Length: 294
Image 1: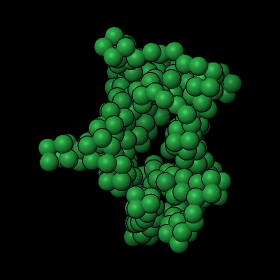
Image 2 (image 1 turned 135 degrees about the vertical axis):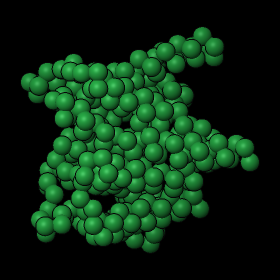
Image 3 (image 1 turned 30 degrees about the vertical axis):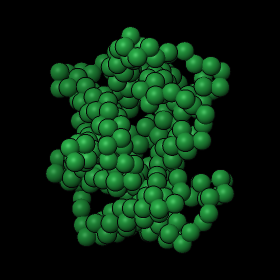
């Protein structure tokens, strides 16, 4: 019972921590561009993960070396995570961050759809219904209270973010990687930091230092809370509680983002948006429960 309670606490904590990603908008308000925000977030998170890996190498004799196949797989994971994080953080500057985070939560439905279409998983009425519900939810979230739509580019970017994250999960699941999640994230975080340096140079935006102590605080927050803390607590949640309850409690992630959007950034909220959120969360819960039964 103690381990189960710890698992529940960790699952809730992981979801809430990851749901604080929209606080990146404070850094946008400080004048930092998107590649700079992501570089310092992932760079600091990588430094912390590197210290963890040094400890694991010393205590558990874990080896940081990888072979050619592992290198190619980790490179693919790094590219997918760069695309997912960059498109999500860009969408925060184009539309309400709470709505963006809720649309992002369609990734379990996308994962189920891809597995059905390309990996010959048996299609079920639950999968079809969940896809329909998630599409209806996204449609409801696409319109604002004035009858117009939120930024079409922002919506497309969030859907790309969800798709690339779904592909990330599938690659992890189907790849022959035999290493700890810490080692995987050590390399993925390095790719993300390096990728945003390349993004900053190619886009001509450059990398800007956080301009104030407040900005450094929010950089540290993004590196530690929605990255490192969420990762660590997710590991313990899956271990002590199980993947299905952990995934269901993950619904607190978009809920946290919505609450931050409404109460911190005064983003719009209405019964129609609430219905859209409920449809997406219902679709995801159906997928998770179906996967658990199978």
